[in-house]
Each structure stands twice: as structure tokens, then as C-alpha cells.
Image (cartoon, rainbow, N blue to C red; front, side, top):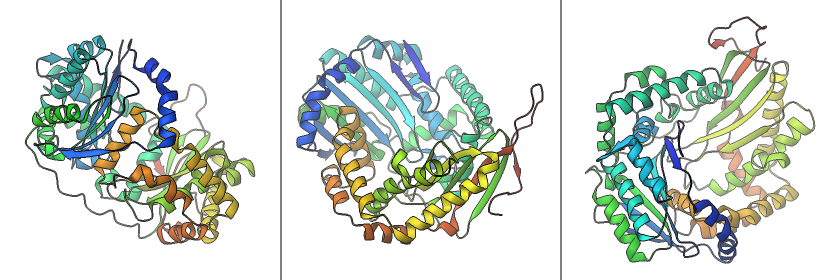
Length: 469
């Protein structure tokens, strides 16, 4: 079975044993992780790629992720270029067409996929360590990364699928609101553009554009290779060297421009035919490796990141019944990623729900968490930490983050103790310095009753603001 997924350009083969093996070995892996954080080994390949490796002998498997500084922030004036390039990698490479790639990985029970976010594009491989199976998976991955063909027919098909998805997204108020929020938060910065692109930009892309992007950003010196599995260090070195040796000759791109702070609040209301209003608030938050990362992370867990027990859930849902779900989160990136707050509520309650959201944020910034809230959050985060690294797939994702964002190699080891060491005053201080409720981007999508049966509506349009009156 072969399934493609538009959003990340990911595809996965079925009929394999890795999931079953993973479940069987989870108990063994858990026992190891609660005792110690995995040891990370690191080196650089002769071609200049950075490698992070963790030996994990519990299962006869290897998880591999190759990450490039080739996310949508590198699109320039061609939104969607990075993600379409990533999606096309598995549609033909070397002498293999799309069907041959799918058949090769399926035949050996492997998984192969690609994806893109704002900072990165990546490819991932999961394979058994049986030599013949691993060789097929590795050879296929190398071809996909180093020699994509960008076949004309496949490109037309993938691009048309993307355009269809973009048109469907224009009818989803949540997607409309999230894209509008990023534009409001980031303005002219590359992070403002959604990785999926726009219909106009995607329609204008050519095979030459994708080939040029691949040649510029998929170089070895722009790559981070993360490997976790039942391998010796020497085997991992050979694997990483093979991968990087075939990549294009291209150096790392220049750093992205700094993310500017919002000078004032930005309010946008988008009329949409629905009985519910989607409300989003945000501003530039923090970057990976930020000095305030742990304080902001723990504080947000208390504010809106801990589900039913968060302050926002208590004030908005439990006390007032204004929304079924309300949340907040920081998304750290290479530059300052967003702080996002969001909820969905009835149109008539949108202004009230927004007021409660803002009042709760202001009160938390002013007062900080109570001792009881802090203790509960610390126990929740540190108690669940072993599960966050219980599995090779999870570990390899963390390795990729550590390598790409140049985080300390002991990041996983010190994470629980850094959380335990925080005080309520440190959290309050960080939020007072870093979060300004008077300079939030605010986006609401909704406010127009759904049409009666048989009636039609036009595409969403911007409307005058009803919020903050």
C-alpha cells in the first residue's frame, strides 16, 4: 500500500514490521530511558555535513533524518517553492520513477518520507538493519536527495494537487486564520509566508525553479544528519559519508534577517459564513536556544499549554463556557518564532472570549504562577519526559533539532533539571520582559451567519473590526 500526503510531501509504505517491533521493544526502551539520556556522538563528514548519532541496540532498526536549511523561509518571492521541491524528491530520482521508489521501500519493509516547515526541509528513513534491506533503503534515500529528476509529468500532477489543496484551504476558517496571523505577526519577514505557498505563486513555478532550489540548498555543508539505531559508530560514519558525498556542491545560505518586534497591535477580522468565530492572537516569541526558553516554556505550560488544567482553559471554558478548547504555545525557530493563542467560539461571544483571553494573559504576566501551579507543572513536564524520548523515532527528531539549531549536546540531559530549577519569579520576569499584550496581532475569522440551504456565498472577505470595541 502506498499513500501520499500533501501537507508535508510525505509518503509511507505499508505491510512492514517496524511498528510491531516498536511496540514489542517499547518496554525495553522505556527501561533504558528512565535511567539515562542517550549518549550523543557527533562528527563532520569529509563533505562538511554535521552528524549526530545515538547507538540503540534494543531493536534491529535504524532511524535516519537528513535536515537542510531549506525551509519556506528560503522561498524568496516564490511561496511554496521549498515545499514543492521537497514533495517532488520522491516522485523520481536517478533511474527510479515514483512507482519504483515506492516499490523498493515497500519490498524491504522500510519507510521513506520528506517534509518542509519554515526553517527546514528534510528526508527521513526507517529501516531494518538487515544488510540487504538497509542497503536498498539507504541507496533509495541517497538517490532521492542527490538526484531527483523533477519529472515533467509528475511535476504537473503534484502541482495540480497542491493547487487543489490550496483552493480547499480557502474554505477552512481555521487555515485562513492561521495564515493571516503569521502575516500579521511577521509582516515582510520570510516567516510570514505559509510553506504551502499561494495559488498564484505555485501555478507560476517551473521545473527549473525546483532544480535551482535543490542545487542551492541541498548541499552537504547545509545538511545535518541524525542517526539512531543498532549500529556501531564506524557503520554510522560510513552511512553518513555516503549520503553527504552525493549531495550537490553548495554552501550554507546566509542567516535569515532578524524578526522585528510588533510596534503596535494589529487587528484583522475576516468575514466567513459560519456560526463559529476562530480567534487567534500572537506576536514574535522566542528562538531556539533562547536564554528565556525554559522560563517561557514552563510558564506557557501553566498558561495555556497543558490542556484541561491550564489557566486559559479554566477561565474560558470551565468558568464561562465560551469555548470547547483554548490554547497557547511558543514555536521557537531559528529566529523568533511566534507566540500563538487561539480558540473557537460562537460568533456572538467572540468579543467576550477575546476579552477573557487577554485578561487572563495580562493577569498571568503581572502575577506569575502560584506555587501550586508551578509545582504541578514541573511534575507534569518532568514526569512525562522519559516518554518524550522513548523511541528511536522520537530521539532522531530531537537529534535533528539539536544539530540544526546548534543546541548543546547535553540538551536532553539537562532539560528536566533546568525545568525543576525555575522559580515563579523567574517565569514572571521572563513573561514581563518578553510578552506585551498591547502589541498583539489579532485575527478573527467568522462573524457571518451560515447561509440558508440553497444559498451561495462568495470567498471570504475582510470586514471592519468588531473586536476591541
